[in-house]
Image: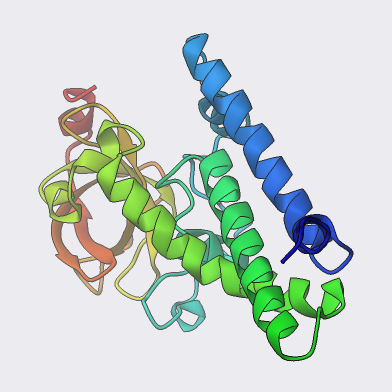
Amino acid sequence: MNDGSVLEFISGAGTRPFAIAGMILLGLLAIEVISMFMGVSLSAKIDAMFDFDAPDVPDLDHGGIAAGGLDAHGIEGGMFGTAWDWLNAGRVPLLVWIMGWLGTFAAFGYLAQALAHLVIGFLPAWIVAFPAAVAAVPVTRNVSRFIGYVVPRDESYAVTADDLVGLTGVVALGPVTAENIGRVTVRDAHGNKHFPWVRSAASDVEIAIGATVLLTERRGTEYIAIPADPKLVAGKR
């Protein structure tokens, strides 16, 4: 490629969406680095602004979540909440997730246009942009999972899922029964919050919102809970 063709490939009409994504990524990265040097992380501020750590709580008109609404992993809470969990939202800061998607989107777009150019020439940008945007989502999910394990967002992610067994918490989304899944607010040994999905251990026990529970075991993505003395939670705070 000569200088003209290189420039066309980097910022021409066929690759313009990917060039824009790359420039936005570099801008966000620069702002994040500068903000960290100033002692205030932009990504942390954005998460705090939107309360990104908190679970999405749907409006429960009928006093619970139907078991029929569970997905293949036993997770409920509406399509948005389930998709948010699938994307690993909360494991890494939202801004970091967005930067990961922008980088992946740009990489897929440039790669697709490079391959197309070798065969038939540059494709219209919109033909490449849509599949690149879709393909970038699962890749960003896996990248964010890796980042979350290597560089935990805070101490709450330095504990494993099994570490929550034996801890007490308060039902935030319910009521919780053996059939109806709910969410519990749990504090780990570091004082950081988790919001695991739980079911009641007994088929004839319904645990109301605000009740204290003890997580007795983990089953996949869920935990089994039994009613507990509220003083157990109060003593950990």
